[in-house]
Image (cartoon, rainbow, N blue to C red; front, side):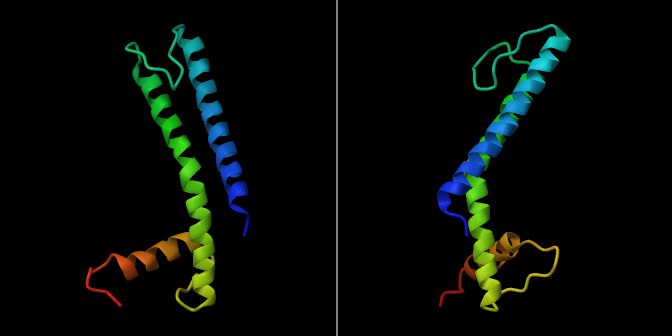
Length: 115
């Protein structure tokens, strides 16, 4: 398993790449429209629907900073659960999704599953 800081680095790079592409899309669309739009992180009363969408999607990209490390941890957890025979993962299935489904079933479905 990769050290935690490598997961953080990967998440940071992925989020930065996505945000950079979104900003470029906004810049190109603004040039095409002949109008200025605020940077995705800047507040403006003059924000149109396109700028709003870009700002929203930049926020989603920033969520990768938290989600990618969680996904990596869930995948490693799923691999361990499979080795212990707690779950079965078929080709094409995702360790993280299987682990989350099992943990949800075990800890969240029917609050009377206390052991």
